[in-house]
Length: 72
Image (cartoon, rainbow, N blue to C red; front, side, top):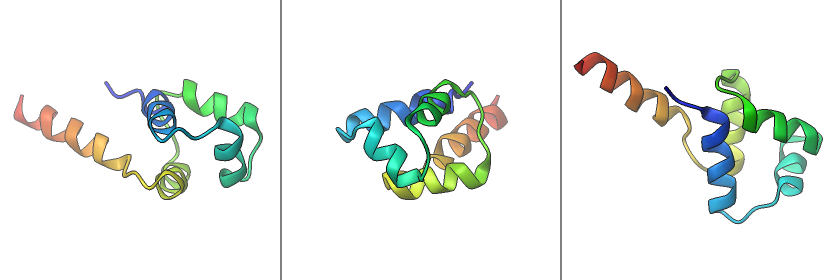
């Protein structure tokens, strides 16, 4: 099972970006970013915005999961 919030948080840290920077880019408050990190699922429009901001295709994680489920 994918924990998308954790993947987003890991990518943000991998890029050595701050939560404040991320919140500013998403046009939201820092508290909302911490809320995103806790989510196991996320709205696709928000995930697209996050993917653009971090220049990382988070949808690919779901495609990989789908491929794995179809094989089993």
